[in-house]
Amino acid sequence: MSAVFVWIETFDGVANPGSWEALAAGKMIADKTGADLTALVFGKNAAAVANESAQYGASKAIVSEDATLEQFRLEPYAALLTKLVQENSPVAVVAVATSKGRELIAAAAADTDSPMIGEALTLNIADGKLTAERAVYAGKILSDVAITGDGTQFVTVRSRAFKAADPQSGVSASVTTAAPALDESQIATRIESLEADTGTVNLTDAAVIISGGRAMANNPKDAPAGSADAAVWKAQDGFANVIQPLADALGAAVGASRAAVDAGYISYAHQVGQTGKVVSPDLYIACGISGAIQHQAGMRSSKVIVAINKDAEAPIFKMARFGLVGDLFQIIPAITAEVKSRLGS
Image 1 (cartoon, rainbow, N blue to C red):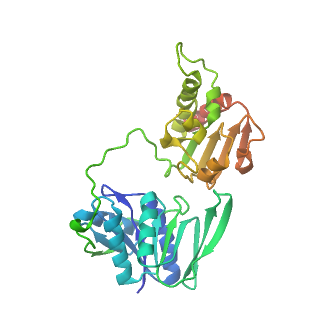
Image 2 (image 1 turned 135 degrees about the vertical axis):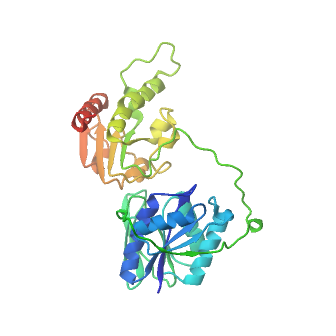
Image 3 (image 1 turned 120 degrees about the vertical axis):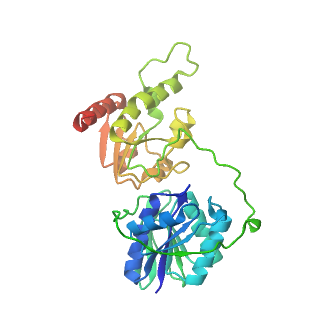
């Protein structure tokens, strides 16, 4: 029987939750083609992650725990995926569109001379051929694309575009072990060490994001005596004392526009947009963000967008489901107080 492969991305032996969304997309393809939904897990703790994938719908798994695969390196990962595709001729190979997923899927598709769709927002399959909807022109247009060529079809899916299945306990997958395609002497890259990146935020997986823009510099709080850059201090104070309390109350991540990051108000790790993170949360609250096209490209696919801005003509209102025109330094604390009251926090 044919298969649908889904690559389960891991780090230090733990699955990236976005891979369960990719598994849901793969299951749709498998159900319509009668194929086996097969999880591919490479590296540390692969067997345990493979069993976890069964809880999210995988009926089979192919694992490889060789030392060459302990940390992600494109060469050994792509070589192994290419080998598995050549040996098994799956209907499709699916991965979540992280930086690793995009790199791996593109490399294996090229190595097998196969068609590929990137960053799919929706997927369908008819007569064995995939069709998808994806964003183009910085998210201003949704394009319908279709695969017409033969062979295995490769696809990456946008994070949070597909809902992961609810995990089912007491299920297991049929696990097969695969040998690596390269040995260490054939791999040019080496990973000497890994260093934890502290103080960053996981915007990509966040269900709720509160973002601030250049208008955070309008915080009326006076800068401390002797401040070399009052505007920057005020904006930093606004992120910490206005946006962060609401984020804490909602269990949200804090984002920012490029203008706020470039001005030094907050670090680049928080930047949402074409040159920052592309996010698709359930709720996106844009505070003092005008809505330049570069920012829209990073958050357009959010399910519900709320805009708070004193400029009623700001472009952000055209894409927002709810809009509040007024002083964000008055509106946001009022919302925070109401959220805390309703949640009893």
